[in-house]
Amino acid sequence: MTPMPRQPSVRRQKSKPDARATMSLFPERGLKIGEAARALGVETYVLRFWETQFPFLKPRHTRTKHRFYNEKDLDVLRLIKRLLHDEGFTIVGANKHIKEFGIDALMTGKPIAKPSPASSERAPARSPGIDGQARRVLNEVRRDLESIHKILED
Image 1: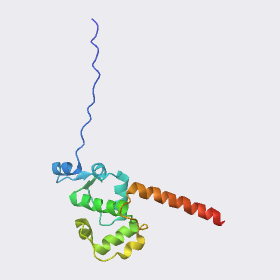
Image 2: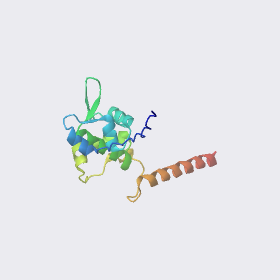
Image 3: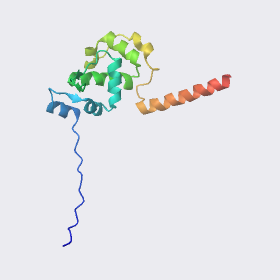
């Protein structure tokens, strides 16, 4: 008897739930660091680094040192990502900005009336129409021009 040829196995990709759906499935547990990183669109090492730089960011740790992020932690992480990636703050500037205005006020997204003295810690001012990709290109062009200027000075 000849054996029957095997059917090739078909791997199905599991659909990945978004962070809100995952949080509703495990509200008491929270999100593991990988799940939180995927929900925010950053790498896990970024979350670990932010935890060392922002003292108010304290996810729950288990006895085995696993991190779990609840919904408030995710909101804080979204705020940090917005300040660093979208608004151009440095880590020091973001910390000062958060201390000045309060984390709760910044998370609600209310417009802030007084100008921030931490603005000196910000990246150069930009026009509201420039997105992240254009900013990166402009910063690269600026660095190139500065290096050419330095060469010409010598």
